[in-house]
Image 1 (cartoon, rainbow, N blue to C red):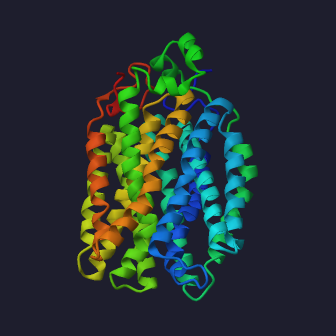
Image 2 (cartoon, rainbow, N blue to C red; image 1 turned 180 degrees about the vertical axis):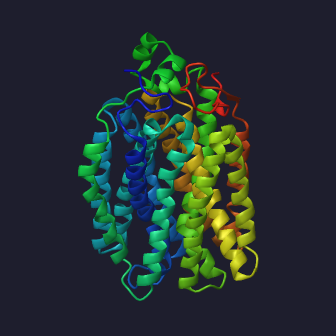
Image 3 (cartoon, rainbow, N blue to C red; image 1 turned 45 degrees about the vertical axis):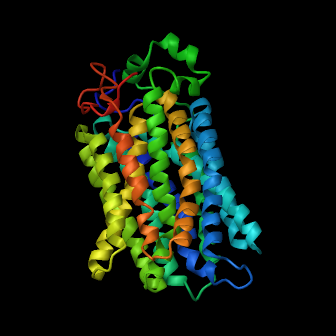
Length: 429
């Protein structure tokens, strides 16, 4: 029996896939933002002698493990299916967060953040590819975008927990919540398909089946071959710019707000607003993207990040500052979600995990650089506004890079009925 037009044929249903992806990335978002939430407490922790530069280094150590996780998991996901690498990554992330909670000194704590980064890096390409393959083509951006809002929701939870427990409580308590992913392992094993399957339209549009089999052994060579080279390099550079913003903000936003005269509770409120804005903004942008405007949505979101960060640096009434923080959240987390959607949208299933893995892996240099970059700017420039201005350059660069992508259809007549015209997918080179 032929599948219903517009429905996925990968063995996974959109609803459960989006829900599972949302929960996994929510936990991952918590693990990502927890360092920023405990940053002010770390600066005053007796015996560890943490400085602003040390805090930036801890953020960079977290990011340093991410390229390894992203590239390995993306490649393994295409080769062995999404299920096994996703299960291993969840177990790894839980163990790393547990070790962070019991770390007795700064050196061990830094090592556990590196291990946490590997787990975080592995899960994002796996979850994005899994949900992308299960999504209804007509609602691809919205459904993948909904799952990726889990990162921001996890950040909201981090802010709420941090505001409740800090500064009076022990910051290590926040890391204990990171063990929760263990309970998801049976769910992943049940819901996630063991093998990766192309949609018929993707196989036909990408290449002939014989060529697909012949080139499947060297997926990186395909990404850097004539068909994908231009878009691959632009995606890598845009991901770098986006992750400078995301990880710089996740590490530094609460501390920057404290430096601008707000107490810890207030700064965590700004962090919550940041993530609420990311959720609402991503969903709105995904709806627009599904109308054939994925490229435009991504460019606008980069530009909004620059505008919002400039606004946060100036004295304004509290409601306006909260609104600016929300826009900054969309410009940071929302923008990177759109870039990930763009990468998934532009590649067939058997290349998608590798494309996402390398895009995030190479782009993770931005995640490594981001926290230390912001730290260096705040140290070299004494102004309390300097940290916010540091985000403007990567935001403008990201908008330019996405603008350089050529537009065209990845599929044509083979596209499922009811699917939107894929006018924003990069043209074959």
